[in-house]
Length: 245
Image (cartoon, rainbow, N blue to C red):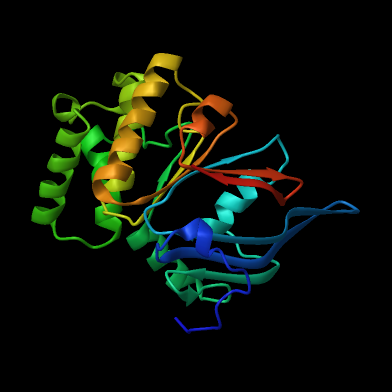
């Protein structure tokens, strides 16, 4: 990956001495819908430090999902600069982006996205298979993650045999088994009852504290959003608020 000048925005007070993980400079993402042009992300300057716990909130259509897809390297900006861990990735090749996603980023989704025919252990192991990790190391990592998620007794169960909370814990184990530096959670409690949702968020927060990962949670739930140490609010693709404790 090639180096490029640092983004123009200075966020020293936000970073509070942290090393930048994500740096957006004047990032815009434009979609064409029929005869209309939608600026889903509109000239965004944003810096996120390593180890931060951040929530991204905003009304429907505010650009939350588009921003998350850009951060996750699942989409590219229409214009502007994106640096990940100090490297310019805006024009990086597909293989490079796939390698970063595989090695550095974990994903958790509202609807779990588990593979029905695989067991809990098989779902957790899948990213390691795709990464070419040796079988013995894969098994050891999967065992540790299932133990950490209190799922050892459910290792051979398929998703249909698990509760919603158990399925989400399998999804978290799958996201964490590659030891990512960035964990992205898109409405992680949206498909769970309130008590199970609290348990899942407690688990994510514990992972963030104990492992030093950067945790970004996208949510419509104000109570959930307020739990983060830094709260970002989007409106019409623009930064409406950025508040830290």
